Length: 348
Ligand code: ATP
Ligand code: MG
Ligand code: FE
Image (cartoon, rainbow, N blue to C red; front, side, top):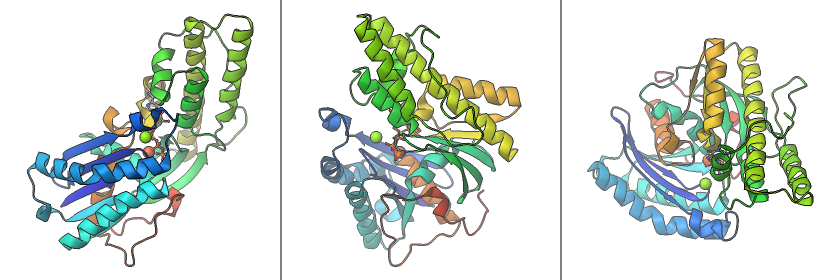
C-alpha cells in the first residue's frame, strides 16, 4: 500500500512517499529556518503562508522522484496535531482535498506518534514493547509503548522541553537561531567539568523532568563570567559543555529508571534532541551496561519530516484504520495517550 505523508505542524514542510512493501520511496523537506531567523523564533502566520507556497511543488517532487502517478496512492496521511493551528490547517487542507479528488482515505496522524515511530523506518527496527524517550522542541516525555497506539505516559517535563532548553540556552550564549545544534557543536570544544550544573529532579523518585532551572543556572553563570570579564569563547564553550552534560546526564538517569520500572530492555529515543551525539553516546553506554538495546531514527528523521508521518499513516492504514467521518478536528494540543490502539496487531 502506497501512502503519501504530509507534515506541516511547525516550520518544516515535509512530504514523503512510503510503501508498506518497499519502505520509503521518496522524501522531500523544506525548512523555513531562514524565514524565521531574523525574528529569533517561529512566526506562526509566516509559517502557514510558506507551507502553502511549498506543499504543491513538494508533492509533485516526491511523486516524480518515485516515478509513481498520484493514481497509485492508497491513502494520504497528514499531521493533525499537536502544532501551530494555521500550519496544521495548510497540510490538512492539502491532504484532504487531494484525497477527496482521488477517492482515497485521508488519515489524521499525531505528530509525536510520527516521531516515536521514526526508528521503524530503519532496516533493523525495534520490536515492541519498549520505553520511548521523546525529546523535541515542544515535548520531553517518557512513554511505555506496548504496541502502536498503546501508550502510557511515565513522566514528562513539568516546564521547558529539552529542545526548548537547548534553544533558549543557545540564545543566552548568543549562538543565533535555531540554537540547539549550534550549542551541541560548541560543547564539543568545551573543557569538561569546569562548571558544575545541577541534575534537576533526579534526587527524588519519579519520572518527571524539569529543564527551566538549567537555563537560569546558565544565565547566572554567564553573568558571573561577564562581571569578572572572563566570558571569552573558551568560557562559552565550557558553559555549553556543562549545560549539555547536565541535560544528557538527567535524561540518562530518568531513562534508566523508566527501564527498571517497566522491566523493558529496549529504549527508543526520538525527536530533534535524539540527534544529539553526546546523548546517544551516554544512552549507548547505559543500554550496553544493562544488556539492552537502544534505537534512534537516522539523523535526518530526528527532527520534523514527512517520512515519519507517511510511515505512521501507512501502519495505521495497513491495520485497517479508515478515514473518520466527519474529519477529526485539528488539535494544537493533543496528548499522545489519547490515541487508539490499532484494530489488528498484525504489524506490531
Ligand atoms: P515537537 O515535535 O515537540 O512539536 P518540534 O517539532 O519543534 O517540537 P523537533 O523538530 O522534533 O521539534 O526538534 C527540534 C528541536 O531539536 C529543537 O529544539 C532543536 O534545538 C533540537 N535539536 C536538534 N538537533 C539537536 C542537537 N544536535 N542537540 C540538541 N538539540 C537539538
Ligand atoms: Mg522545526
Ligand atoms: Fe516535531
